[in-house]
Length: 199
Image (tube, rainbow, N blue to C red; front, side):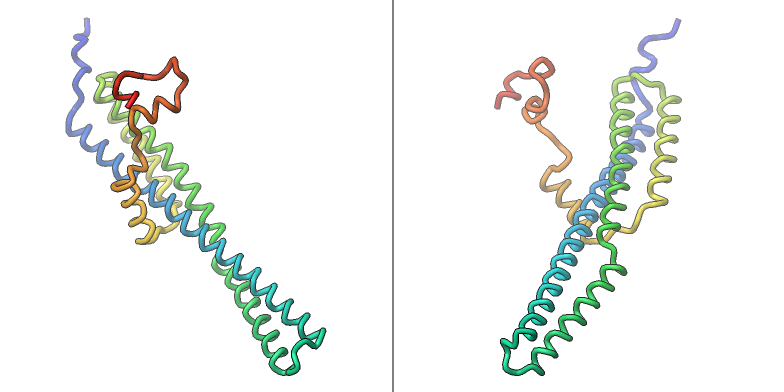
């Protein structure tokens, strides 16, 4: 008969490796989220400027049509300049596809979220003794393969995105919750309660 205490303790070196991999995935996930936010903000600015320039060139054209300016030469130059800027911004929007870049980073973040949560489950199973070291190694290898597949299709991130991710994880605790916060998300029957949750 198997000794029930056999699986209570996991290989500490294996656990350390899984925890290290988990940490890298956490940072990668958060960095891609921040990069998606940066790209989407750039897309919004790009569209806002394009709309403003288009409106300005139309307004200048209408001003020219109705002869509200006495000097038609300056009005023509202003109209031409606005039209040139609109063309430049339109070409820029086709070249720098910030909306597509944002969507690509969000997709990678979503796929890394799955790897991240699976790492948490593996660590919990290892620490609770619910999984053998051999099974833990198999799951670790599967997660490494999954992470490699995600990273192989991931677009590059910027230093700015990494800095924001680092700040969010270290200073703003963007991935942690207190007992009270978690209890508020759950139905009453599933809450831990107690003094800590009530504070």
